[in-house]
Amino acid sequence: MYNDKTTGITHIAVRVCYFLLLGAVIAFPFLMRAKEGDWYYFVMLAVHGKYLIYPFYAVVPAGFIALVCLDKILGNIKKDIVFDNKNIKLLNIITICCLYAAVVGTVSFVIIAAVYKSIETVILLAFGEGFMALVVRVVRNIIKKAIEIKEDNDLVV
Image (cartoon, rainbow, N blue to C red; front, side, top):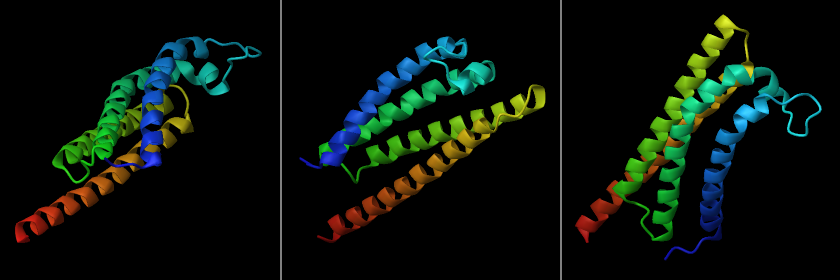
């Protein structure tokens, strides 16, 4: 068994994120109706929530799927299943989820900018989601290459 504390902590953090995502799904409508002076008042959500609520709910399923995949990868790592094609598949799914969120964010930004007013935060989030897709893809390619090297070494021995 792989015994690394950071993997365990990350695994716990991912599982906490399930509840945080659920909390955000439930809280968003209330937060966007908050009035200035309320303890739960967030300027971005109260002022721009009506523009952000639909893109947010559109990417929630992708976020949940990405969390499930990350949870499975961390579980595999704990079981010493690292260089395995299962992890490659899971990383592919996470990449697709990130790209989907980036597309939704970009389209949302264009619509919001054209119809209402520009909210730069949306495009920044879309860029961040796109960048995460690239990072996950690089990690996936590294693991895939490591699997190929491992399989070549197994054939030699």
